[in-house]
Length: 84
Image 1 (cartoon, helix red, strand yellow):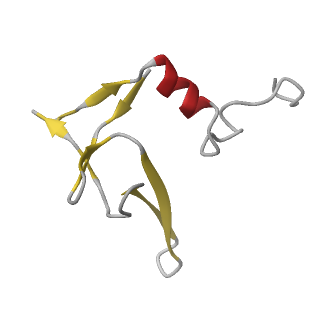
Image 2 (cartoon, one colour):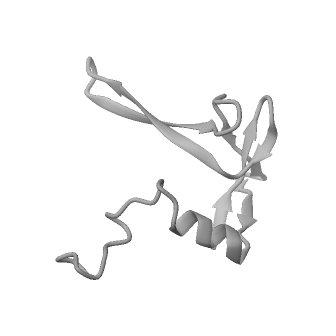
């Protein structure tokens, strides 16, 4: 499993970010903005030659990501769920 690397203006390269949604009701659009979990600055995806740089997650990091509160049940339904 891989995670994209982001560049934070204050913290440098980070891979664990939080996504916030900015809702523009005037134009009926939703913008997803990644921010640094440490300092809450907006981060930008790190690119090399137009290709996103990825971080290979360790087994511990994978377990943390899959069992975190940020995990959306829509993508990981429970066995008792009607889709499971």
